[in-house]
Every structure is written in C-alpha cells, then in structure tokens.
Length: 72
Image (cartoon, rainbow, N blue to C red; front, side):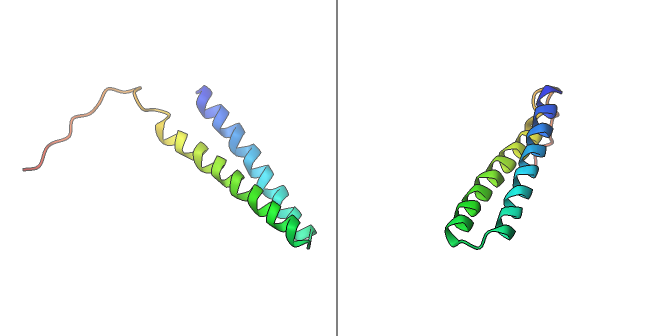
C-alpha cells in the first residue's frame, strides 16, 4: 500500500512537472531554452516510466506461485 501511495504521489508530481514544461515551451521562443525544456521533459518521462514499472512489481511475492502446465 505504501508503494502505491508513493507511486501515485510521484506520478502526480511528474504530471504537474510535464504540464509546467509544456507551458514553458509555449511561452519561450529561445532555442536554448526550448532545448533545456526538452531535456527536462525527457528526464521527467524517464521518472514516469520507472514509476510505472513499479506498478508491475507491486504484488510480486505476495501470493504463492501458480503452476503452469508444460508443453511437450
């Protein structure tokens, strides 16, 4: 549960950050600023992807493994 709450808080923060970056892209025409904002967006999306991966592993090990039939 703690992991889920932390992930949700992190995802909300990243979402807010991405919105602010998008606002900066609309506001500034300077190519250097836009490159900088682009690199910030890439970093924010990387954090977002890593947080999403944790969702896949949150329940790992909480339930006993299930047997799968083998194919011959």
